[in-house]
Length: 383
Image (cartoon, rainbow, N blue to C red; front, top):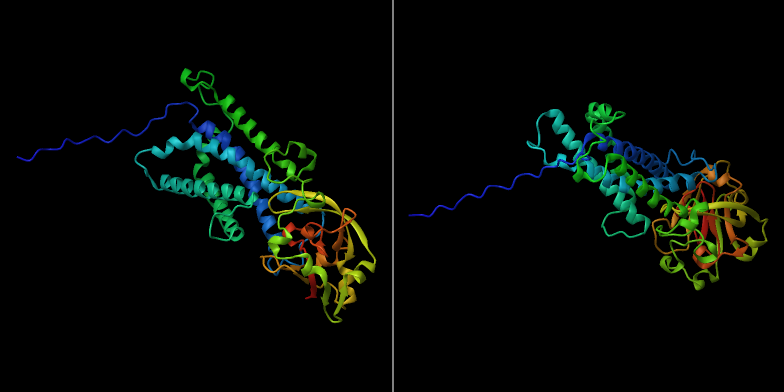
């Protein structure tokens, strides 16, 4: 006679009785997280279009204020970093709902679960890949910039859908205290106010110890940021070295600037240095979030283009000596090319450019991402 195997009952689903896993706590943290994600999204879109403008936008992007990109990108990175502890706290407050049974109760509930799944996945992807981008570590096979930009729109759409579906609950818990807030069970140990204070303290801590890389009055507190605005060759950080770009002193030894236009010409370095020089103070702001203001000396781009016979409102293509790199060739819209602050810089803070900072010549322009401040310039082409 066959022996019957006793059936083992499945383990019960976990239950969560802590009062801090409630809608009021989730709504309070969600307000902060939503604001951080909104700021991060808007500044990220701004950064993307400044960094990779479509053809129709290239000539209308403004070159002023000179600090515009520095402010926008610094705020983008700061809000993204601040959103990480907020996201973790938000997930802690709502994760018991993942075990709700049955998983789908109605069409509205299905939309809610779908919006939450997409929202959480997109938020985790965006924040943690963005964090790895700050430290320039790319352990993935895809190109970061287009994927990060695409998922940002997915995240924004999922957030709007989630708010629309959950709006009755959000409105109900937006401004009132949940009953019994002051009489929490002893096992909870801390009340909601203590939790929110701790979350706020965590956000403040990660912000204050990283934002100094772009907001230089706080640079002394810049403990966790991967860059310090004063550390680097000639007092500026360097993201891409000459060695990484395949540029050496030998490469630049016989350098001549080629300007291509209706009246093309070439200039050796000695003749370029003999031209009227302009001194400006402009920030250089990197997409990774660090920025610092410096003194630059060089020849105005518009003077070089005018000498080549460039018609008014011309764009310019800039070609670098570097052998490889996504930004070896860069195009500059008319507003930047005509701005008197846009230079082919030869000196940094009174010193000849070091090789890592673009010797013999580099671009410096106002309100421009650092990746477009092309180093080791070999040629300018009127478009």
